[in-house]
Image 1 (spheres, rainbow, N blue to C red):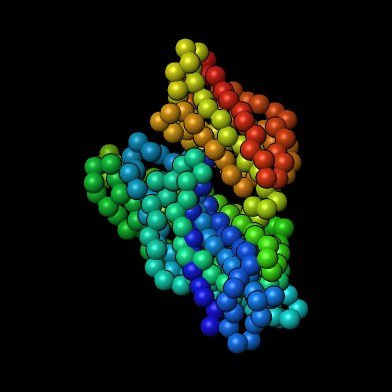
Image 2 (tube, helix red, strand yellow):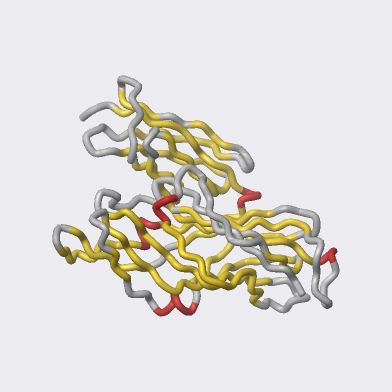
Length: 281
């Protein structure tokens, strides 16, 4: 019997919920597998920009994670890597922090898609009121996220997959207000990145006096917006899971002039440092 164990981790940029999978060699296999054709998988999660002044928690309960194998031996089957019930507050995770699910062993091979099943979603406002949100049918059945490029799980190797759950796009204000608080609709928006092929950008944001600026929105752009995050109380940010390439970084905060830096080169396995100093408007 193959041992299963998953990690869910939050990687936060402004607020991006990311799910990461780590794959390495395994020492246990079931009767049909040898140690040469089994890998180990771990999941993580992170989050992106959001109306923080209204909301204290954005909770998602995940009940199932599957990976789709395209290996000819397995015939393109779905493999369950984790099943249970884990509730995650997406707003707790910033600066590359992760909350882990147990690890899981999977057959070695190529995987091109992840399926994530969500059981419930809720919002907790800053006044303590908690409201459950309606789930779209595809969230209960399972959200399918393409892995680009596909992940190669090899014996003795270690791979990490990041599922980046964009909180700002997934939790949309509905336009309905109740007692000065906005209503929300939930429509999950998730991207998946093979971390072995990705890098990161990190830095700090301050004003002209050198004082740290919190809740600055940091946007990563490559043709279109890739993801975003917010600085923490100390003015720091970190954006994980960026495929190799050239990016533009934008920093924005109410009351300050926006700043943009072009030509930031991201290399896999490396963290690029980029600081900002924002001028008052």
